[in-house]
Amino acid sequence: MTAKILSGREIAESIKEEVRNEVARLFEEQGFRPGLTVVRVGEDPASAVYVGNKVKTSHELGIVSEHIHLEADTTHDEVLSTVKRLNRRDDIDGILVQLPLPDHIDENAILEAIDPQKDVDGFHPMNVGRLNQGQRSLVPCTPAGVIEILKRSGIGIAGKHAVVVGRSNIVGKPMAALLLKENATVTICHSRTTDLPSITRQADILVAAIGKAGFVRGEHIREGATVIDVGINSVSDIDLAADLFSEEDLPKRLAAIEKRGSTLVGDVNPKEAIEKAANFTPVPGGVGLLTVAMLMKNTVEAAKMRRNL
Ligand code: NDP
Image (cartoon, rainbow, N blue to C red):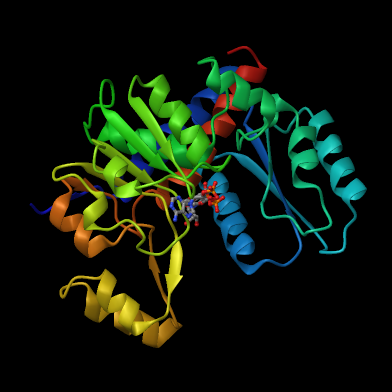
């Protein structure tokens, strides 16, 4: 079997187009534009790229966006008071504090300080609780993007056995909650799971959110399953690249390693997944593209919920 590649590009573009139309409609009919503020602390280079993308995409869709960049030595209390100030501003509908924060800042305390109505990342315990109760809430962007990929690719979720590998608060746990909400039978695996392949091989839908390059191999995958690869890892080792990529894909990956020092790979071995799965999301070009689109969708959703629209 050769898997169908579920590209995130087209789906992300459709979502962004829908958001653009909704933003225009809100401005015409209600007289406001949703506002998003992204707070970044310190100099993490990956965070700078992510934040840049979020702000740029907001502008493109007509969302008013603002980037607050605080120095790496900003105190916990200063970050906290920035969040509180944003909570009070009526023109701000969404507040996103880019993670990771520097070690001296208590991440949980900052996330809990965000007004749950403005918590467009969906990490506040109030939103986590509402999601688990099946209530309307702001939902973490990456797992919400996975659900969009499945639905918009016509892959049924109800009644399917979905296995999620990873139980982080950012991806694994909300992913499992969303699949459950869509009526899948859900199993969550983690680093203490025994005999992982025997469980993942039962999956109709297998979601990998582990943080280890190419960890999920052919032996983990049931023939004909849908495999969703959330992972984003850099690979610079040529031998590892040869193990991960097909003969067709390998030359351009090796060229990328030579040019930029590394190439991106998910938590699934793409060469083996493509041979066994029926559907597979590529890295790059899969789930990753949905995250920013879902953030935009969440910002509009937050703006509407706050105004009871
Ligand atoms: P975390 O490190 O927070 O969580 C990893 C999870 O994987 C943990 O629950 C851990 O188990 C589990 N795990 C680790 N090793 C194994 C193993 N050998 N067998 C089974 N389970 C294992 O990572 P995140 O959830 O934040 O991210 C996961 C991946 O998704 C990363 O590659 C990250 O880069 C990517 N990501 C992609 C995004 C996107 O936009 N596409 C957004 C966010 C993340 P335990 O709990 O027991 O330690």
